[in-house]
Image (cartoon, rainbow, N blue to C red; front, side, top):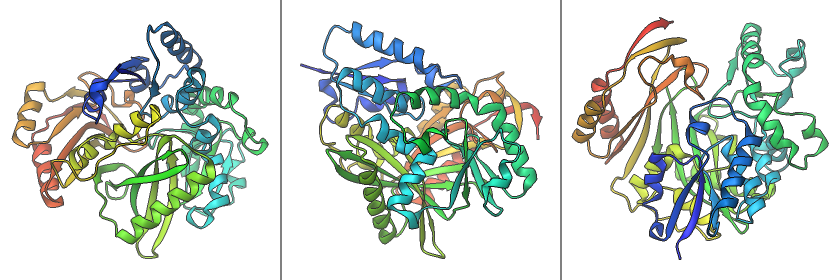
Length: 429
């Protein structure tokens, strides 16, 4: 009999990837919660979403073999709650929150891998004297206790930067803090964590260097890192330019990152689920710093793994959700190298006046095999309506590509960029 796999927020792009993993002919995928409710919005009514998901699952006339997801908040935090109710495989809510609650996560990291994390503190952005209590020298970085992507993250070089960040945080932090606090109420939290809810923020020492992400999973207590993806930023800003797989970091650095990942995930007690951990390597000081832990695969990396290894790492998500050790291949894909590029504009805001037509996109894709172009905007919308953007730019298109080497990859992206015609009006510089 086919296994029924329920996927929260399932969209067409990821469904296509799921249909090509090993064993997919024996699976039936079912979407739970419309993708627009978790992709194209900043409003997350988690209690209502959980009720509707539970109603759909209980009404299903068949076996519920797995409940899975590949997205950050709110999907990641809904999964342990739903899986617990329906008896499917997933890590505990508490172990997941030890990763996603940034303050709790740092406390756990300080217990087990202290030398690999920056100094940090939590603060209340609604406290007018918050800056006085942070105790870090400029520059430092601030971000909410719970966020996604680089949203509401700010580099603080002086008091005026902090004042600007706090103004933005006070206006927007409630969009995630309120639903995240509902999730916190479902968990057993230590007192020192309970006092730092989703309305709080983190201040951390600046860490930097070459950034990457370790993708891994835990199966019945065995922590397995299986791939490292480089994260390359635009010069001088926090905005990502591209993700590139496999990593070009030295082998000894990648090995150390894998060992650190194993240590912290064991310490947290995370089990039977995928994760990815973001790191920096300061080459001059040969210093590794852990940035944050995410409780899922990165969907941004799905096409990269498919191009290089032969299947998307959705393989990991589905196998784990079904209670199986992941059957993830290595280097069986069509390309030695793959990348996801972020085509960005660095305005404060603007109106989208023109987006490339589907015909234009298909023509570009046909000339460079392996290219996938996904516009993220439509004509007439304001850039500020894009969800989950960083504080300095807007990603108007994603471009996935494969190549035999890095120089070809970059050259082909330049060819694509010259033909992608976006136009904007009412530009706010």
